[in-house]
Amino acid sequence: MTGIGRQAKAGRRLAVTLGLWIVPAIIMAMASTLWFSATTVQEMADSAYDRSLAGAVRAIDANISTESGGVGVELPYNLFEFFQLTAQGKVYFNISTSDGLVQIGDVLLPETANLIPGELRFHDGNYFGEVIRVGALRRPLDPAKPGGTQITIRVAETKLSRATFQNELIIRAILRDVLVVAVLGALIGIGVYMALKPLNRLRQAIDAREPDDLKPLEVADLPKEVRPAVEAMNRLMGRNVEQAEQQRRFLDDASHQLRTPMTILRTQIDYALHQTSLDEVRNALTSSKDVLDRSIRTTNQLLALAKARTLKARKPTLKAR
Image 1 (cartoon, helix red, strand yellow):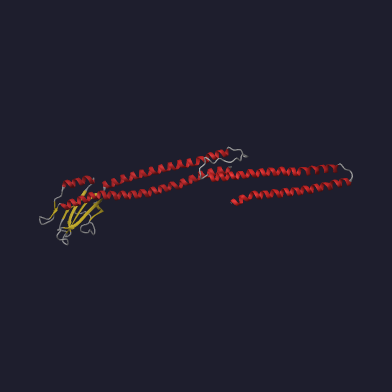
Image 2 (cartoon, rainbow, N blue to C red; image 1 turned 135 degrees about the vertical axis):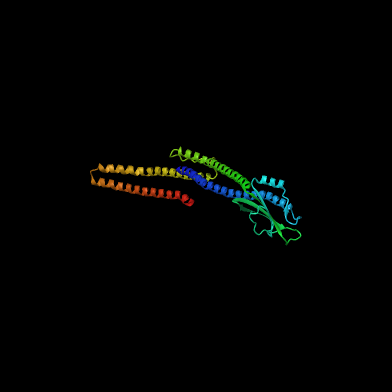
């Protein structure tokens, strides 16, 4: 009986252990998902903001002229002001030639190393202690002379707006993952409670039984995973009931088999005690010895029978093991 109660308690301990393993696993999964989300958010933000940066580079490139014999740029201020508004920070630009004779704009912007002609590249840099994002384009000054002087256009913006955008998305991702963990934890708790509820009812029913109550336990309302264990317990209790019945019958038979010889032996002893003749006493004791020998043989036979029944009852248990 107490085995089922221990099984229910073991089930609760198992549920707690599973919870202690599952919750950290969920947290680790959330951390990895958060790292992946942060990386994705950064890439998406850079991609979106770099498109605006590329538009500004292309706009400046479209307004560069060499008609005056030098390099000039008619900066579209309306477009540039609009870009400053969308960037929500400071914007810098620089136009230079490969011969170093022309520098227009913010001349101290960081260089873009190994820039290939026709390539539009984006990279981070530092400008007077500020972290900036630089978009650089390199092309021939005269399209008809690809090997001639090269012109480099760089537009940079501070990363405040994109950092704010990234942080907002990351905070939302954290709140989403925390909510997912909370929901999963609640669902796991409810699932464990509902799974252990039938076991708790079973334990209470067992605790309320009398010590000699060996009736089979009900398995209809139990979870499928627990039914084999309870059915095995029912079979064990059935074997215990059968063995107890056999022991009761054996004791009845033994008492019946020994009662008559003991009664006869007592009568003969009483008869010998009342005799004065030694011959009569000897005859009575001889008869008593015969009765005692028969009683010993009967007792040995009963013990052998009891041992055989015990071995027979233990064989199914040994096979089950």
